[in-house]
Image (cartoon, rainbow, N blue to C red; front, side, top):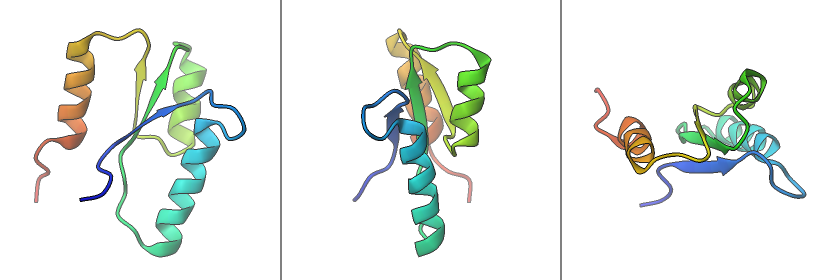
Length: 84
């Protein structure tokens, strides 16, 4: 149960996805929660935007528009079997 993967838009009103991710990571650390995979969904393809996503605590970046196979590969990468 629970959330397994978050697809986070970087450009949201009020609280952007980068700030939301930083808050989520602080929450995880404070409560000793497991690391939840968070992936940036963005129309920005600049390397600076990918860097911003990573420094905010996001795990991956998927740029829009994207093909179905790109989304499926991303989900498989983050939701597939984890090594023990």
